[in-house]
Image (cartoon, rainbow, N blue to C red; front, side, top):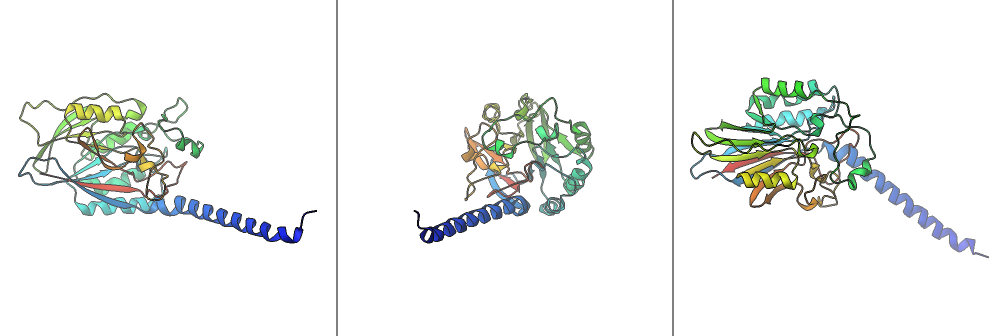
Amino acid sequence: MADSTASAPVARSLAAAGAGLFAAGAGTLAWASLGERRRFQLRQETVRVLPEGSRPVRILHISDLHTVPGQEAKKRFVHSLAALRPDLVIDTGDNLSHLRALPYLLEILEPLFAFPGVYVPGSNCYFAPQPKNPARYLWRTTSVEKSDEAPRLPTEDMHRAFDERGWTGLINRAERLTIADTVIDFSGVDDPHLRFDRHPGFPREQDGPAHARIGVAHAPYVRTLDRFATDGADIVFAGHTHGGQVCLPGGRALVSNCDLDPAICKGLISHRGVPVNISQGLGESRFAPVRLFCPPQAVLVTLTD
């Protein structure tokens, strides 16, 4: 017959350990859903791609806002970025996460419309997110979010509003712009995640060479980065990965949500010798409002000689 007197302390120890693990898990989940995703950060990088003697060009890179009405902390942070006085804003898509979020998105971005800007769309500029098993994110690394049932977002209205405020759409389009006395050739593509991308190359240098060539895309798929490198980009800007969104301590991403190695799915990386700036993004899907060891961020990239 078992000794109930001896087993009681063991049972109490196991119960205490289980309670401790539950409390730790609950605390981590609470931080991931409430604390980390509101811990907005600004990352700063300097990249030498301009000809000798050029003045620096300061680029504010924003991405993946996944806007839902009422996100006042996000709105305050984005408004604060206007104090940086960037020469250019690059928006790499996934701006919406709610069918009625466009007016609020424009409120969030309003101070940044004071500066020149370029933009490309992501899948959550076209299709509203739908409820799904959040664990699916951890094993479906290249899932495409388009479906026949997904509600359409007000994409055309959003792009029209951006255009009216002076930003330039780079949706499978090449464009030459002068930014802070610097001639920059841009090449932008529609969302590679949805396979909407059709590379336009860079503008022909009929009026002389540009000081820099910049590639812009929402999702940094390898084929997309390869094409920009082949076309002669000096630097590429992308988002989409959320930096992994749910990471291990130290920020090691578990997935990239594309075919890029998770180890290099955020920050300033190099692809075939071309610098690629991948933003962790400023938001997350409203059906997976969690970030862990991966705070939301904007990026200030200074191009120098």
